[in-house]
Image (tube, rainbow, N blue to C red):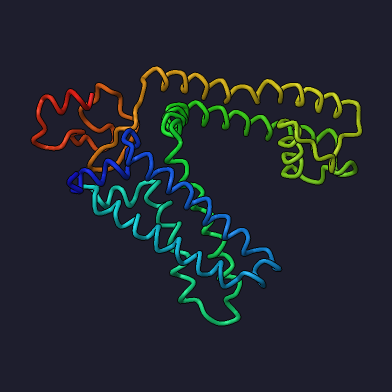
Length: 280
């Protein structure tokens, strides 16, 4: 096998080949191990006893992920588009904190070092790429985003109205000292969280609270139904793991010829009709 850019891209970005599956599994193991090392390093007695070993492990994973990130940029055609994409940014966040910690010196910056070390936990987000249904879920969320925005706007309007009414009904003597605090009460009541730090005392206030609680159960089900409908539609389109050679976008249907994100031809230039047929 000739390891040219196209072959490396298929192994790294796609999962329908044995080499691609092995690469994904190995990377998932590395991500989990690196995140585990960061979490263990935050335990005082483990850090005191195994701090040096964990430090070496952290640099091992950082160099490994750096090589993988450079390899992704090397084999993809549109490097800038991938670097600005969600997964490209997450890949960069997974390695840059370790390098930044080299330039932060002095006891006054210890808090900054701690933040940089915690930022390495972002590596766990890289696992989303290797879950088969992740792209399908992302498509469903994108498709339902406008409906969810309208739904959230309606909920915001309701809690403002309910909070203002409760401020008028209960007043400061019962803990509703301001409209913002009353809106906070309306939010935790509508979402059925109910911390209990503020509670209505009058009969009218308790009646309004009961109405908000009942509405909360119905409102919670709305976004679930919206996303479920879009998930069903995304599943019907039967997206596969074939990625765009230019921008690495996934989620193309089997009949697609051009990338849904950048419009590039999904088949490398000069591909024969037989090769295109095999890709479909």
